[in-house]
Image (cartoon, rainbow, N blue to C red):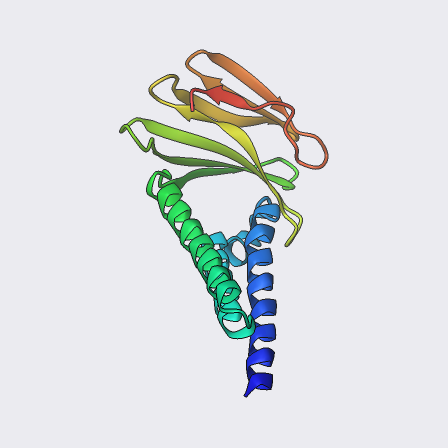
Length: 190
């Protein structure tokens, strides 16, 4: 019986540690927007990993104080991750794709997401740039425009690697390097 508990505790420890590592790894791989639906699940991985570690503590540790302290710490960590995730998602804006503009050479794509601010009904636009490199395609943030401060009057490609964003306060030209990184971002009051 002791051998089975030890084997189960070891397996749960490995599974819990891998799930917690996957929760952190999702943040590291967040820029790869094609992999994001599969890798970026910090709540699912973090809470499940914490609960697996709590179960491993309950099965594997012999001393009662260490056992229950381990279970309590791992369960509290899983609950904290779940609460923080709920809190962050409660105030996240619900963005929808408004437009997509492909660069002249087809290696980049500008995506404009629209939504509203979380605490006020002001229209909000997020500007993002997608590279096209298969599964390693990246997403770069070009900025955000809040209609309470500025209005987004237009956005277009002016060259193969140059964007022009027209705001109510003026024009912002953004140059993009060979890897898809912008040289500046739009500060639109977000």
